[in-house]
Image 1 (tube, rainbow, N blue to C red):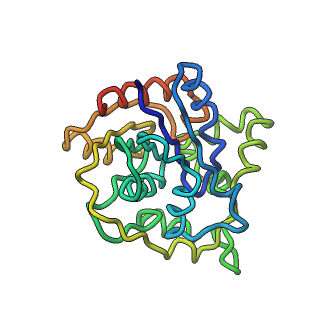
Image 2: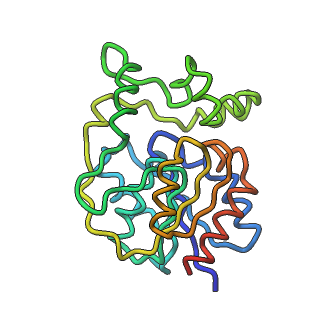
Image 3: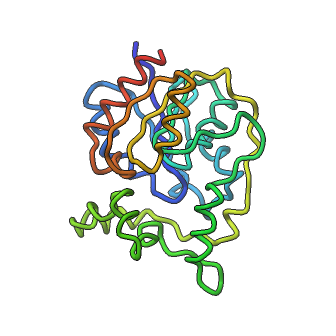
Length: 233
């Protein structure tokens, strides 16, 4: 029997970003969970608290494959060390360190984010980070999403407003190199991570799309997930 999967969104993007891909997978008979931390918490949890919320929201009836998009790469690795899991698939995110401290974003992105904060440290929603960077907007896919105003509004309804201090936190990862892992590259942003996954001989798919492919290209994303899941299992 094909294992169930848990689709985890990064904290900056709502869990509903996975729904189009989840619908395709469910149509193929795959058992899919999408834990929605932001919808179930009375406040935005800290980075180090996020995994405990995922653990509370994920069914323990079977050992699923955990799939994390973007910064959720660290979250699914951390989650896999705390529950029974068949493996993890990182989707357009950085490969976390083998153990030890893992922050929400790379230092270079952290510097970029710092320049977006207002005088109180409040950041705009993630979708608005790229308004002055047409190249990055194209890579993340927000320009494509913006062509459908209704779809963009629905997407933005789930986006949290983060404070700059939220990014100063770290998760202390346990050793996870014993957990089977695969990688799906969606956008050129993560060429470096895909190359590292290839070096490690992980199951790997490259889609040559955008960072928002789970929302914008669900057929391709679902097919890549199923292919990598088959190799992991």
